[in-house]
Length: 289
Ligand code: CU
Ligand code: CU
Image (tube, rainbow, N blue to C red):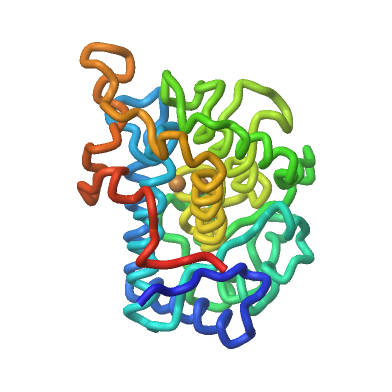
């Protein structure tokens, strides 16, 4: 049966509770940290070697679509009513948004050590212990808006700039691609200051703390950001019906700079060996409301 992913701002109190309880149950069973590890393992940058399947790469969108589906299936084995909500960060733009309430994600980190002190993922509640990619402590950290050098969440205009681009992605298919929807949405730039992060990346930067880098799955808001990014890929396809929904069609030529580093439309993506072509649509699985 097709299920619905909802805007987090429209979840009932009971829906929030069931989502949070399922996430906490996966954490207790050790399953949640497997998702953190999978993300760390596949976080390969331009400057690393090997296949870039999750970030700085065309398969950023299909890889995370599949990753969210795996997570959602795990949640649904705990509670079949649960789906992953999405966070429209062009609308819910402040630390006062209901997203950060004690019934859902909890609030900002405190000033001294950025430790999250409220809500279900506060270390003081005893369940949310950071195990993978921990740096200074075993508590979840956030640093909303980076107060020492303030940054804002992406604006509707900035998102519209990405959504307008009719080409899915362009060579060199990495963080330096100047045009193409994928990188405008993923958000790597050669800019400095606030211009250094756009859209999806800027959301990671705005939340700060664990949301920075490969271990960002440690913050459950990761999933709500990526559900919105997933929804946006749908909107982009609907807006550009004559554009190829994924590029490149064939993997980049052997011996070229991108050889062996980028997934073509029909090549399997690790760790599931599923090609982007099978993830171009989620119709028949879930819908967004
Ligand atoms: Cu990611
Ligand atoms: Cu991300």
